[in-house]
Image (cartoon, rainbow, N blue to C red):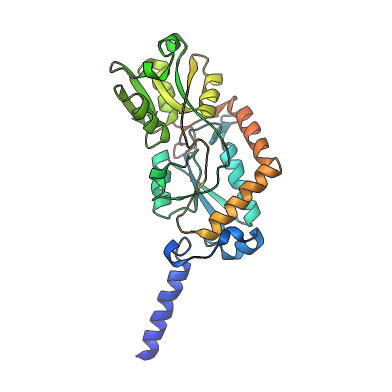
Length: 295
């Protein structure tokens, strides 16, 4: 009986060691930030051994999107994707990417079903319960977008705050918070995909929308009827990687990789290449089951 109990106890202990992300923060006071990458790598635990599992929402060019070849075959692209591959290579891991809607990326990360999330995240304090934030790897901005025919209606942010206006923003995003803050009297329409927001703007169903500046500029290149008309102040500007909470070794290693990518010029190259690619034939959003762009 004692032998069986010992075996059961050992099995439980082993399961605890192998489960998902690293041990809870409250149980780990190690200063991983002082370690080198070589010291950190053996300590990293991931959802799937040997893999860096990442969730993303591929509707946010040039961060993440599908590039289409001459036969409209899609390939996941964007500077978030390139940076994630850079990090996985540095860690000696295989990169596994799971596309989903934006809000789903936060839910999956909070449930510890993924190691990292990259979807143009800003370090929103409201997301701190769902993820740990890496260092900022890209400093962007926020913008208000409308169509060319309406751009004179919006000389400043105060002009967006009218009850007769329908203003769009991505569901669960910083932009939705900015819309509610700057246009509280307007009808705020939250949609799951930025592509849906663009379609509603172009069709006249939305009067304006809050979109991050770099993607907004990319959309404006592809759709000349769009106009990026206003800068939107936001204190926490910049993009971060969401890391599974409590995984100190992985968070510290990712921060070192970000430093390397900035220092060696890789990140700048990733942004440049993704921005150029985003001005070509692309698809933004999830694919159908047969891996073709969804309508």
